[in-house]
Amino acid sequence: MNAKIAAAKRASELVEDGMIIGIGSGTTVELFLTELKKRIESEGLEILGVPSSYQSKLLAVEAGIGLVDLLECPTLDMCIDGADEVDRNLNAVKGGGGAMTREKVVAHASNEVVFIVEERKVVETLSHPVPVEVIPFSLGFVLKKLEELMKECGSFALPRIRQGTGKLGPVVTDNGNFILDCDFGEIYDPGELEIELNSIPGVVECGIFTDVADRVIVGVDGGETYEIS
Ligand code: 5RP
Image 1 (cartoon, rainbow, N blue to C red):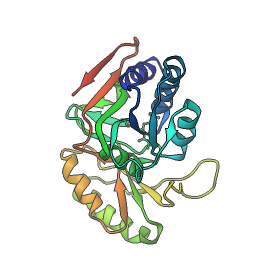
Image 2: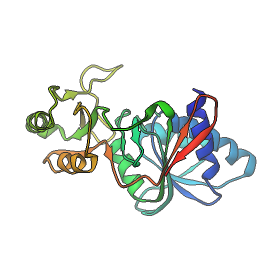
Image 3: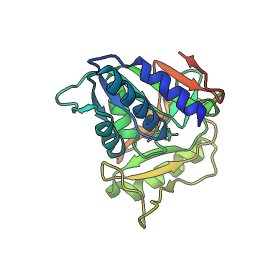
Image 4: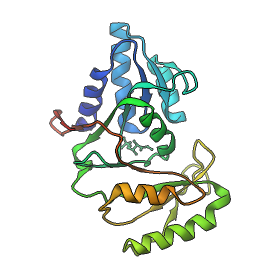
């Protein structure tokens, strides 16, 4: 927990008065918003933000961040988000919380993108299962295409429809879609896989993020941080 808090606190220090920020989702972002709330209250910062999920929308309101949307503010100053896995080339797998589509949009809308992670999430080669958001109409077709692609990549796994907890049946995203978790094994060319996944008709977005992060703040257990950039 120390590592997460350290990364979240460091990121909160990067936010300046008057900024419009993209707000990711997840438990590390929750800690970031807790830290930012302290600064908003003690320093009187005025911050606007575009949240990437209902989770972060509720937390942003609680933190005293003014909500705006991309129609009003299509360019954001900075995006802060967590990740499930990052490599040293600033590629990441995201979507553990099922919010990767909006997370990718706010990241690409931002002038600077910062991921905040604990050190255990930093790897040499990405291998975390990749979440793929799919419109329900296309489910059978996309399952077949993903199965073929996973086989081509040397994986014997099958795409898994993410199941909800607290409600029966599949997870339904904030966009009304399903999520398929796809274990490709080691991902040697994340950029290529991101393009291939996103070119399947019916796929809305996948959880591979390449060419978008400017830096990663890594928290370590002792409470220190370091950066990958
Ligand atoms: C949600 C995400 C999260 O950023 C990712 O799952 C990391 O979450 P956490 O900070 O809880 O470990 O991509 O869609």
